[in-house]
Amino acid sequence: MSDANKPELPNQLSVNPKSKFYAEEYFQHEIGIRLNGKERNDVEEYCISEGWVKISSPVAKDRFGRPMLMKLKGTVEAYYK
Image 1 (spheres, rainbow, N blue to C red):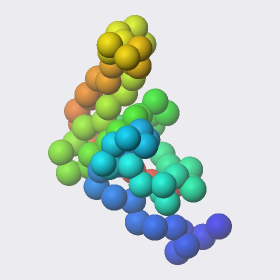
Image 2: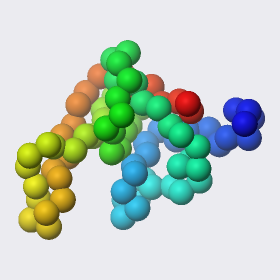
Image 3: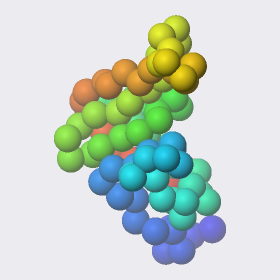
Image 4: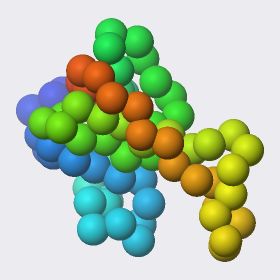
């Protein structure tokens, strides 16, 4: 599939359907995220303009049993794989 058929990635996007930054049309294609030049496969949410990504904590849980999110800062690049 060519890049012409894919929508341009937004500034902020989340994989959580309950988030206001969730948009189904972007997840029809595989998305890649780079933070400071290293590819990350565990990103839950990102913001390019503010330069952060959120990833799940491996241990800490919130009161509903879902993993807590940690914010990592740096240069964020989002692209289609």
